[in-house]
Image 1 (cartoon, rainbow, N blue to C red):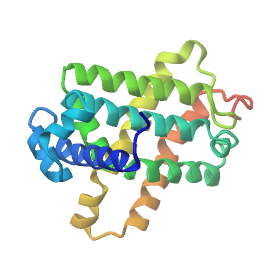
Image 2: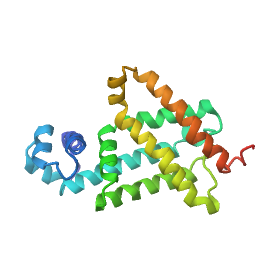
Image 3: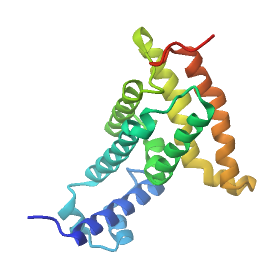
Length: 214
């Protein structure tokens, strides 16, 4: 039977509530009762749509991954030349917009990433798929990893993805603590990111448009 629009709206409310509770309590501390209360539904309805807390978290992670991969394979992204600071800033803004729309999920990723649990394994599998796609799908900024795959993975994870996730998770706290406007903070972050991660990537790895100039 085809799902009704109200079913999808209810499921979206449940997922949004789950992301908020997971982000505030951590996955282990989250309770389905609290998710139900925040979503404005009864507990039984959550179990009607979803099998468990793990199911809710898996769906949230998959939605995040799919959104990122969709952006990476979009025509607008594929034609961007990573060696252009203006173009690089453009894609950075798009990525940050996408991540900030899912800030609670990002907070969960950061919290659970350091734990040695099955969730940790799921997170690293997701990040590995994202990084691999970054290496292979774009035309203007994909890099030729060759035998340097290990180095490329380290570079993308520790100096690329994690700083972006940290920015999304902590930028509001930073704004409140230091009294800085969001537009200014993001501009400063992107400038710093381009001067470190992007600059190293462009110089350290050949690109599919040719090797970077020395």
